[in-house]
Amino acid sequence: MRAPVHGVSMDLDLTGKHALVCGASQGIGRAAAHELALLGADVTLLARRAGVLAQVRDALPVVHDAQRHALIAVDAGDTATLRAKAEALVAGHPVHVLVNNGGGPPPGLLQDAGEEALLLAYRQHVLAAQTLVGAVVPGMRRAGYGRIVNIVSTTVREPIANLGVSNVTRGAMASWAKTLANELAPLGITVNNVLPGSTDTPRIAQIAATRAEARGVPVEAMRTEMEAEIPMGRFGLPGEIAAAVAFLASPAAAYITGTSLPVDGGRIRAI
Image (cartoon, rainbow, N blue to C red; front, side, top):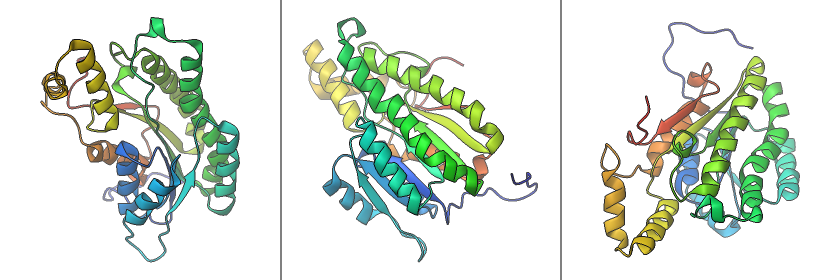
């Protein structure tokens, strides 16, 4: 492991590094892929829709001649196929940065959730992340560089009403990440969580629409009410979440591990 360096400027350069970004077809995942590419990383996008991923890949920044971007089309809940495709990827191009990210389960009360809803959410998040870690960590260890960043939710700190299955799954992800961070720290591989608050993505549109329907109010009125609950008075932008992901993926964040960083405009009330 490289010894600490003192008196140097912040190192955000990811040139020569390879990042695998999940849920990269839209929203925060797409924004994270863009930021990592801007820092010089080769980026492989992972999501279900190959056609959409191809468009996202073709729009990624290329900041140096050797930089190459790719895609993997797979349903993260299909862990057998996910494992096979991830192992094929790292056989030819080891991954140094893994961004675990996926859409949240549908809104609803936990007491009304069936067993299948909980199992599906666990498979798409915790088991998918575990599967990818198994594929990428050996290469990180050989390279002497590894960053695992999980895009989770502020529900890790404060469960949100009517997001029952999501609250449970996000909490499980946070516990998984903390355990893994302690195990991988001696190897210099970091594991951190970014906790987005209400971010202007298709996910928040779904939540606003569900709440509006339940209350019998217009969606725009519900969005305004939700934004008023945030000290900054607005939803976050995907790029603002992505900036935190990119920092935690960089060499500058080498001594940060096992943390959960809220990027929420101050919505979490706890200190």
